[in-house]
Amino acid sequence: MIILGINISHHTSICIYEDGKIKKLYNEERFNLEKNWAPNGKNCEILQSINKKINFKPNFVCYASASGASTSDREYKTIKQIQKQLNHPPYFFDNSKHHLYHALTCFYFSKYNEAAAIVVDGGGAVSKRFSPYQEMQSIYTVNKKSIVCHFKHNSNRMYQFPEFCNEETIKNYANNYLNVYSQKAIGGRAFVEGCEKIGMKGTDAGKLMGLSSYANSKEKYNLNYDHVKIANDIQIQTFNETCDLIEIAKTKSKNILLSGGYFLNCSNNFKYVKKYPDLNFFVDPIPNDAGTCIGACVYYDNYK
Image (cartoon, rainbow, N blue to C red):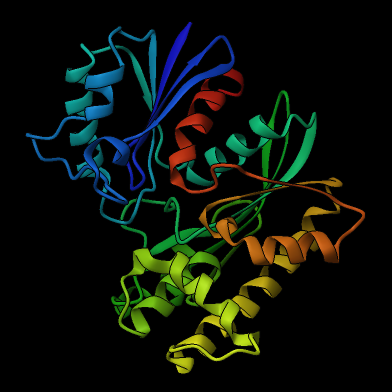
């Protein structure tokens, strides 16, 4: 059985998944040469990666997304266009599983039999459509047969709409497992907002991570050190936040998976390994959203 996984958010990607194994993985920006490209639902759009690499009709298609509070209509328009491009194979789409797909992608590559997965990024799925809260941190336990969410921290990404920020909203979007809601910028979102604070694009969060390394340099460079301090403060904040998550995860397993765009942060990743020598860490080799097309296939093939 050939499953085609397609991530339709930023870092748009496709993977060919056959009989439980990844055969090919393509990032759309490598074809259209537009960094961080994402479809926007326009009728004229087609995926060049599909045009150039997919010359067959898959048995099934699994779609992944990073669903914001108002993106569902755009996502369904995009799916409609891609389905037409693929000659309408059967498909599966659930935009509530963004962090879960990150966790399963990492588990697939890890080769562990069981693990606790920590997912941290700049914002994943919302609990309900038009909710201002997005998942920012999640903890799952995963094995070959099941995946269970034990913790989720949802932050009010839509900080520009303060009328949504009230106790009634929090109450309305509460779930049954350990859900935490806040208006604090955490994880990858802290770097995004840090970028916006100093006049950079939110998509340059990785550059702000890199800038933090200059805070402890003995040499001086032609840099704005006020910006360096902001970057380093966020680096310290998110390190401590993730250590709190590790403290929870290690009660579930000694095998710790790290996934989500935040874990492109190699400097902090090394510090976690150094601080917790008794744990077995595995960092997702494709921790950003480009990897979620794999997680969608793994979920459909093994857990649905």
